Length: 329
Image 1 (cartoon, rainbow, N blue to C red):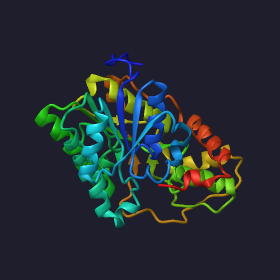
Image 2: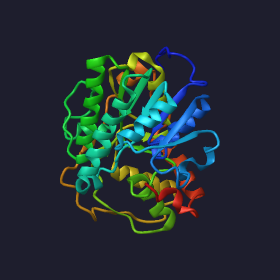
Image 3: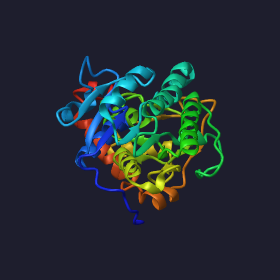
């Protein structure tokens, strides 16, 4: 792996994580704790309950409550936390649902990002914006950061708009902001309405699995690898002002993913491939070039698709009796 110098240890550093109770955010929180950081986990509902994904680390983090669409709550949090580093993951993140929740996409993903940056007013050592590989849409693959983008969903459009605001703040004011574009992250704690857990749970529960023919291809990233990339981006000065793909395992068709998962489960069911139509804005190849992540962050995925799926299946099997762990937002 390329050797890339980091600023310094994360031990004792004040790190604000927005979207900390989310799927990827909760893994980022755990990774930061392992590195000795002082983690401020921002969520919009901590006064009523501890977010389920953070229950096992609640004594190790400092939970803070704010909604990114409320500027005054962010002003209050920033004034009290005084973060040195910020990992911004708060987002509306479901592609399919974004088509009928467009306003929520704009408010959370675009306005929420701007609200946070305005509240911080450049007073941070590094800000990592976690975007999405979905911004490439139907552009020619494999996707490169200096190539065209063509977002084809409200989610992708809103995330690209937020990314452009981040880059504008960097270019206008010199703020140290890094923009990441993760591709198809999966792993423990993901909700059941995403494709990998949907397939796993159908197999474990022996329920019908209706899919498209699955000819579209993706490059999946195990969540521990995505979290590692985000933490690396917090530490590495070479990323400032850059857009960086976070690309995991080899290109694989959705059909192959489903068949691999079911084979790892012992083929408990037969998938109904072709039972569903492709969505009108289907992205046929979502595969990115990971060269820049290696060069700037010293990062590449540590898990093959099969390695990550084995770990993910083990987690869902272990927690099958408590489905509240993967039915939340």
